[in-house]
Image (cartoon, rainbow, N blue to C red; front, side, top):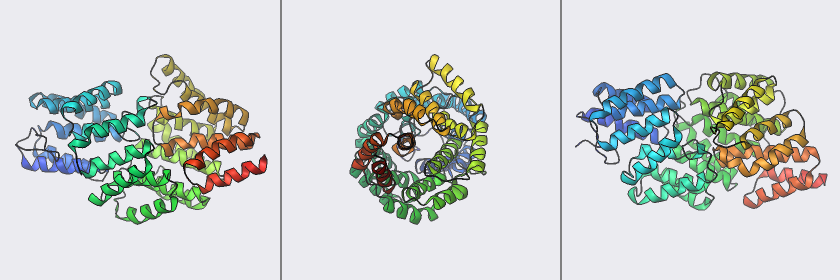
Length: 437
């Protein structure tokens, strides 16, 4: 019987189609360029291969190609009638993700993995900074990711992909030494693995080992295909190390060369959130002349996220709208409030306060920013993303404290961060807070 890379049976009579499908799986699981072509080749070899169709649909969805994603998912559902029960469930779960039914997809995935723990593509949809758990609005999503990985661990052994996400999950749950060691093990098993490189970068960042993180990515990225899923985001990680060193020119150069919207082949959610967050961080650090870049990012966000719905994009929309002015943020806030009233805003009303707080800060209203952001910090984790991504809102609160004359509050927040990890930027903020007290 023909099987996938995790020894699960595949409903296809074509060995060539299965080989292309396995190649596509490897590319998806390593965040490497080539998955689209591999699944397309699998479909050309066997037009009735349902799993190849649903995998291709998933890639369309990640790239914000909704019409194509839904069409291919519908085709996969039709073809799946003759597939195995495992494949039919796999298709249904992925279709639920594509059709924006995240709660149904997450519960379906959990049940599916009890029976088929080695269905890695289903497991992968629960994980990561943009996965079903992270965007569920749950305050315990980091713990949930680690728990599901630990349940699956006996079924994977020394698998390069699984160790990548087990390491990432430990890192985000605060087990930094374990997370880093697992990520390094995964890299040793397969160097062409952007997910492991990403997880290792996060571990180094959370440990405050900025120099090691920058050195690692600078040496590893040249071999990474520029068209791959995470290429721009990994450059974003290098920009964080430059910001920590106070090297604003290098951080802006990385934005201009690797991140800004310019026909880049990365998922729109990555492009928009990386661009908006890096520009905001540069603004916090005192970089001027960013207005043209803000206009570009705002236009890109309006194109791909014109309405409220993807809440992680929405909270970043608040950054670009606040930076460029106008009525865009008022419109988005009204949409978010309507979604909250209907019970459709996963992070809850605190996400709205985060948006309002960022506008107050951009308007120079430090008191208003503090009043809105301070209580929202307890709910910040619910927006999803990673610790490194969410740190932006905490950074803004620190600067609002400093500018608003609340040096003691700034010192307390900065001290808690420095107790967790060293940071040249936080140390500089600490000195500023002490000077203002």
